Image 1 (cartoon, rainbow, N blue to C red):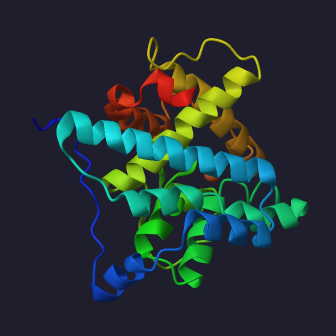
Image 2 (image 1 turned 90 degrees about the vertical axis):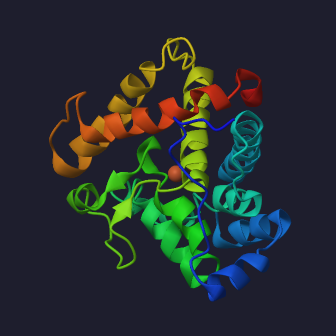
Length: 238
Ligand SMILES: [Fe+2]
Ligand SMILES: [Fe+2]
């Protein structure tokens, strides 16, 4: 039974070279080694491994409920490398906070330079703010604009799953810090409140102005996540 609300379809490799690159994806172990080499901290390495596991669980649930299969290798590699752009910014604390949200674009650039598949790069490129941003927003936030794509928002199932899973992990992290009230299953809209504070802080620091709770980034975040609520079981986060 197909789920009509699941508008995101699995991605495609695009061309023959991309298909072959996808056959040569490194193992999780090799990816972890390379992240350590690039200087990504252990806390972040744990985060990306948790994200890979959660993404695979969500993909399994999507498949169980709808029959729609995502590419598990792309999903795992995309989740593992989604924050690789932070390795660079951690080396230069002077660049924060401007560089922090743009780690999605920086990470995608690193992934492409490593010769990994475009679909892995895209998982990193689109994950910021829990639902991606438009090119216009990226320009406004002074991201380094790279000549690849016009959209930094998820376009297919693998990109969406990585983005949504990162969002759920962010909520868990916030709950561990003692912030109550963010129960996504009981009150999905609480996601917007949570991200409002985070994104508003970034706008204040970079552009010296505040956003409203009606900002399109928040709607985009909510709309993508809302599609996946029924595929993310609370026990996946235990
Ligand atoms: Fe990130
Ligand atoms: Fe992340």
